[in-house]
Amino acid sequence: MFPMLRQSFHELTIATRGRGLYEFTSGVESWLAQNHFNAGLLTLLVRHTSASLLVQENADPDVRRDLEAFFQRLVPDGDALFRHTAEGDDDMPAHIRTALTAVSLSLPVRAGRPVLGTWQGIYLWEHRTHGHARRVALHFIGE
Amino acid sequence: MFPMLRQSFHELTIATRGRGLYEFTSGVESWLAQNHFNAGLLTLLVRHTSASLLVQENADPDVRRDLEAFFQRLVPDGDALFRHTAEGDDDMPAHIRTALTAVSLSLPVRAGRPVLGTWQGIYLWEHRTHGHARRVALHFIGE
Amino acid sequence: MFPMLRQSFHELTIATRGRGLYEFTSGVESWLAQNHFNAGLLTLLVRHTSASLLVQENADPDVRRDLEAFFQRLVPDGDALFRHTAEGDDDMPAHIRTALTAVSLSLPVRAGRPVLGTWQGIYLWEHRTHGHARRVALHFIGE
Image (spheres, each protein chain N blue to C red):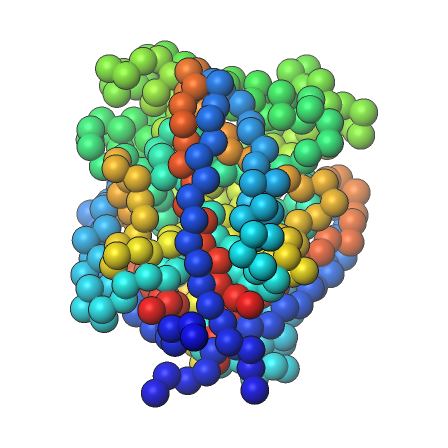
């Protein structure tokens, strides 16, 4: 009566070149397509404490630039408030920026794609000033 | 041995009249009831980059008023920091407020309702000064 | 052909002693182990409007201290902006801090454990100055 549900796991690695937003919507959609996943629930989890996940506008690049500028002002590098400073002036701000955004995202999938709005893209937000290889765990359950 | 799991999709449209919090807990519960969904996992995704989802207090309306007032002060309209200004003074703040809150929510469902606490309601947070028709994708998996 | 999927529910109660981060990763993993859940999707929902969920560093305790110090400065207790003051100077800040962080988390599970990174732990963030018994709903779907 009901179609059989199945689940699958994957991990994407996103190479960053320092602070900013890195879109990986196409990487997510490629994995769904390769596995012929049509309809279900997609979960993303970033496996780091100084990078986060964001769904945001993928049209005007100034939006990403302004997001980054706002967060740099809101959480200043080298703030005298911080005691956790051994890993650099940008480390504690990176933890706070991660707390202020999201580590996991849950996205319904239909017709093989996340049901994002017209202007929405999936981003990895690197909060450290240096580049890193960031791992994002993927899980799909559905048909 | 185990009950058969099934999944279903829906979309709610929430008409806003400008900035503020719009509760739609009853719209979510109606959909669960119409489909006789008893126990499972409910996922909500807002399909916009200038509105977000929030679970917050549904008792004293001053809580919503204070949330809105705090976010207006935290992310000032027309801030000279912003370059993305073509769509109005409130547009870039709306993107930032969305980044600071949530685009997706995951809610366990038991006895036909999300297992919210006594004072929790589900809200759409409109971050633009003008009203919009906001679409929220729903996904249920369970029994 | 596919392994049968099942789901299960649980609730953890976390006793807090006032503001700060309380790790409960081991409580989550114990529940997974007791039920022999191996691979699937774990969802957590905090059932309160003045406490939230966080995945953050579980190594240097200064990280948690700095997170708490930053949020206290960002959302000042007794701010003259607030009207919702009947429940104390820390109450409206607690609602705002909850809005700025997360009420639900979605964590893929493999080999019986959430696929967290090396430094990630699961925390309940108490935002009130007094201690409370905080309830976190758990849902698992998988094998």
